Amino acid sequence: MSDELSETLEALGREGPAGNRPKRMAMVCWSSDLDRVWPVLILATTAAASGLEVNVFFTFWGLRVLQKNDKRVTGQNWMQIGESLMDRGGTDHLRLGKMHMGGMGTAMIKKLAKQYKVASPSDLLEMAKDLGVKLYPCQMTMELYGLTKDDFIDGLEPSMGAASFIEMACESDITLFI
Amino acid sequence: MSDELSETLEALGREGPAGNRPKRMAMVCWSSDLDRVWPVLILATTAAASGLEVNVFFTFWGLRVLQKNDKRVTGQNWMQIGESLMDRGGTDHLRLGKMHMGGMGTAMIKKLAKQYKVASPSDLLEMAKDLGVKLYPCQMTMELYGLTKDDFIDGLEPSMGAASFIEMACESDITLFI
Amino acid sequence: MSDELSETLEALGREGPAGNRPKRMAMVCWSSDLDRVWPVLILATTAAASGLEVNVFFTFWGLRVLQKNDKRVTGQNWMQIGESLMDRGGTDHLRLGKMHMGGMGTAMIKKLAKQYKVASPSDLLEMAKDLGVKLYPCQMTMELYGLTKDDFIDGLEPSMGAASFIEMACESDITLFI
Image 1 (cartoon, rainbow over the protein chains, first blue to last red):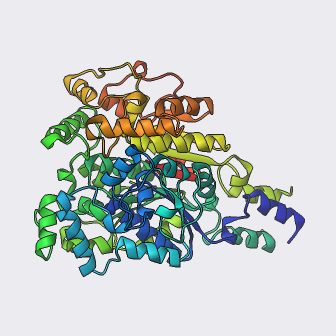
Image 2: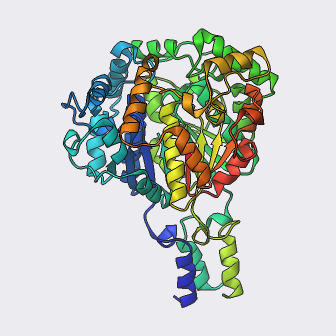
Image 3: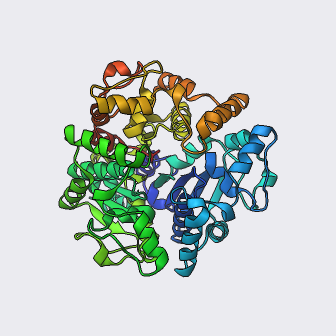
């Protein structure tokens, strides 16, 4: 390849032209509602299975998704502890954002999902890790909630901030806020 | 064009450089709330009118948007039937996700929209089809809800799964989850 | 550079290859919920501080974010006035979309944010303007709400419609609907 051509290609992006690297998806998982976490995890695992590099940034309510299922109380002060009691973390405890109906709606949709062989959020999270999806806890939200590395499931990437997410999103073909 | 140049261009992406094809938008319509469906349909029709290729994937609550307005009850088992009764489908029956206030808020905003000549979701959906916007029902959600092709309005694309959406989104200039 | 190469580069996009211009982000701020406005403003300021060109389109409920904090009543007719009373605008008056709990939850998270030095939405909005983030009110929503330029804070871009947003989003590396 001529020098001129190489320079041209280099000019097309920091990492070379999109055609020379795998496609990428960057998602923000902002919510801990079952009906939002489900699409996050379905899209993440599907994309990874299709060969994409997938980065998911768990922030605000969404950070609770990464919490261990058996961690009931988290936080360092009364406000953080109070919040943790009302917003239970872990993929086994997610509730529908709409039509939860005191648990009935959530139980019903979980039952339907099982019947139609849609994987549960807990299974999808494991699959995501197996498929190489990168899961990043938001550093700022960890501080707000008083959460530490010990409160989270294994296999996560180091926590990061919004600037790192922006950098990843800049080099991604698909960017979604869910 | 020299061979080297052709190869360079080919390397830039499966479908050639973005400059050689129309711009594209891929959206997930996840919600059936009036205040979310409205932006989906406004952005879809506006983009199509501006010359973009537009693909919209209707999934989770959003699948109900494609339901015929006169289909009151859908589903094959009691859970699906129950869900259909509480979450009425069709663009004529959407409710605000916030400030619905027993119907008063929703009625008010519809009245304001009419007064200021903002097209209704039902009109926008027709316009979208006329403008060539492609509307895809989510196969998995159809199974969950027990919905069949007969429950939907005419003029839709065949149902598809998340993998097909990911593929479309990869080749799109705008990707949004609404 | 040879003519052929220049033409090739030109063919890659209306504005030349992405590598020759700063990265860009286009966001829709659709909500006036504190827990959604916060990510909008954190992502906008962080991206601008990282050198990106950032455009934010404030539409539907999100338009209220740009309202002056001391404007209590807005609108030209009783429906618009009524809506303004129930959905108070201005960054000082945002409420959590979840766990607001009559104000207690919102007050608590604001207190935590202060303790952990997370900037308030009002401070972030000022920072955004200082960093050159472009803030666009949605023309259609202004009409629906009966809002005028006088109801908004200073330093905004002229109001625009969905078509202008689509055009900006087409040339952006990150597109998000929040």
